[in-house]
Length: 325
Image 1 (tube, rainbow, N blue to C red):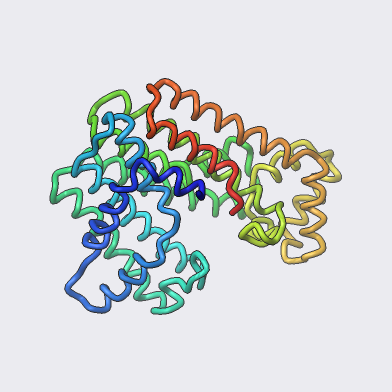
Image 2: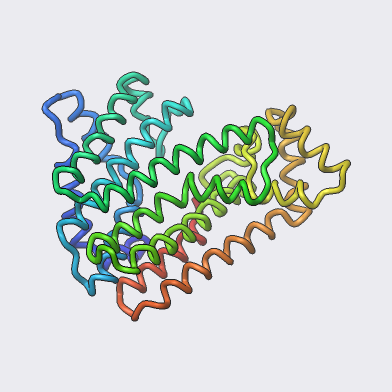
């Protein structure tokens, strides 16, 4: 059995029901929109976000979920899908999970409007049901994701990223959404409990580990899902690179920065940068940091009594670190 199927086992029924509710939540009177949303639903990924919502809700709700849990998971997925549709436009990307993206098939104008539509559907789903506490969690996440992306763009221009700034960027860009899923799962079944903040922190720690793992793929081999050196070509400052720059002598530091600023499209130079980072402990340092975040997340999880939902969340934490793409 695949790890993702194993993780999903205790919430298989909820996930099935969620998929039906999620499809319904996208519906419109406009045939073009329905064609596009049908396309989106049929090309969904691993569904990690709703899985976090349901596993946390069932762990805290002692095996019970409610309508708020389903709505919360749908809102997260609607708003997350909206951001992905917009991201593909911003990045000029024509592929998403191996399929053509919305903007590749229907052009940018329609993609932006579809993203706006999904965003509004998510907001209305919360407002119509007076789930204002859930809406606040999600709205904060969307704001932070936008700020994280803009901070990264601003810093990439000057390449003056310290480790602290790097962590600020990935906390906002990546971790905030997983944190929102986990706190939302808790809030749906136990509003105003200490679990809401505890689970937010748990999700944030996993999200940071998840992004460091993504950064490491850039130094892996071709089969791992994204080509080697793509972050360097895009002048993205990742943890292995930041550590290598910070620990280099003046000559190597100048060479590294110059390579990223002026020679980031030169394949041979990018390979040399990757080799330097590997030889000078950049990868080992990032792996060590990733495991530290993993253990901090597990520490929070271990304050809860054992259950099949807790076991699945532990598996999820392992999966984030051990996945191959």
